[in-house]
Image (cartoon, rainbow, N blue to C red; front, side, top):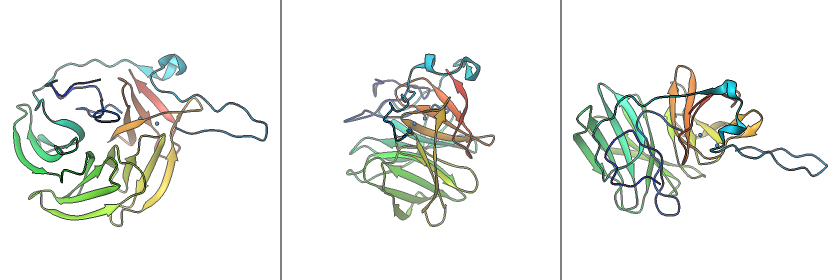
Length: 240
């Protein structure tokens, strides 16, 4: 597992407490479905770190070309790139925060702490608002992007892991293979998509990014990044 002492933004995902922190700088992200018949048959084995279970045609190797300084005490959970820097959501109970960070220096330009009882998670930007999830509190926070003032909150029924925005819907992961599409005004779930690769559920979808019409997600505790068709939930490519 990654340790809080690792001081670069490019990181592998970890989770704290029962799981230790999930986080990462450019993308890195993904999760589960099953099948049933009258005759009892084994459910498909979830795909996690086993690239041998993924069609070679889907695999593409990536290379880390650079890294940048990052606060070694910040457990990065969600990230939004904007105007030459980024907003980030940092986790851990008693240490969670929302930050504006300069790039490439890594300097923290603005910070607001999250109440100690919450473990902050994924982050997305919708217009002039920043939307931040929490891991197990089943509550999301809404902030004014410029002032970081808390302007609202909303409930959800699952754990909160990753979050991104496609211009129409907020897309949330909860550590399963499901992705939830939320109305950005009411925060109600409009639809749910189960993510699969070669017919198998993808376990533990984590941080999410919306890139060129696809959802990119890292698989927790692996170096895999999966590219997901947002309509069908099918994995159309895997970076490894």
